Image 1 (cartoon, rainbow, N blue to C red):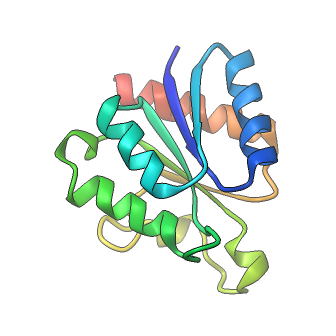
Image 2 (image 1 turned 60 degrees about the vertical axis):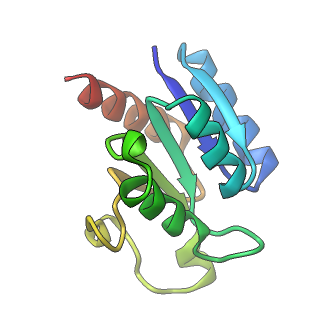
Length: 133
């Protein structure tokens, strides 16, 4: 299947998401912060990156990581990104898939937390399939 990198500071969520994807046959790596994720992606380019938005040190670190992948790392430019977030729970902004934009939010798809793992698995499968096409 695919090599998926999950970047999320919530260890319990990341472990659960990784278990779901491993059961679906994917190879999964979890990184708990954006800096470690960049190091991991420089060492091995994932087939898909699953990024959280909010991290303790920066409420928009996931946005910045997505932008860095698209603008500062040529080998990561085409990696599909699934953005996962609870930002609307913390800040009622109405943030959603309609906000996907190549400059502001350069991601492939968006899923709000709490995550329905069946939907999560479907989105991962669809993004991996589209990337191979």
